[in-house]
Length: 218
Image (tube, rainbow, N blue to C red):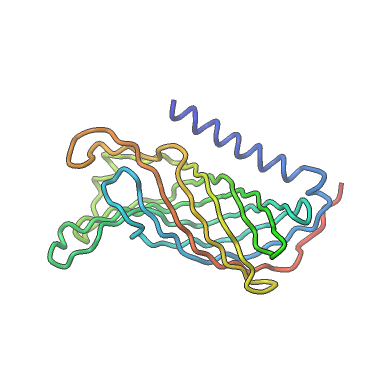
């Protein structure tokens, strides 16, 4: 069932992007592009480590496509580092644990722009796994992901708020959560049982808007 759901989500995501890009209102508008640089603060629900202790990059490019004065769609292409990490304890270094999962992520967000130029967004992202690493006691291990192979694709729902610092610079705060489990953990709370794992992300990013790139026509 999980594979079926993932295939449906991937098709729905691709169809939604295509429909927006080909809609007459979008084709008649000038779209803006820009750069993104920021950080992900992440944890994984289901791995017995709590707290947004894993810090990674969230960087890439975006294109903003306006529908009207109040509504727009943003599509991003990101390099996004996720994972989890246990609390570091100098007296118990052997217990230090960290999971690293790096993705190419494509979020698709619908935004509402209020009268104060702040905007609020919600959407869906599809992320393709690039690499995995696991550290135990500060030493890299190759057994964790062999026993618990992650899915190649992750799908997350997201919400965000964005505020312009100037005409070109914006600050963005985003929260995201996996819609379906990206991995199964066979151990939870020191018991051998299967538990689904889900990415949980808070991202703080800065965006730089370039001028209008082009104007599409019917």
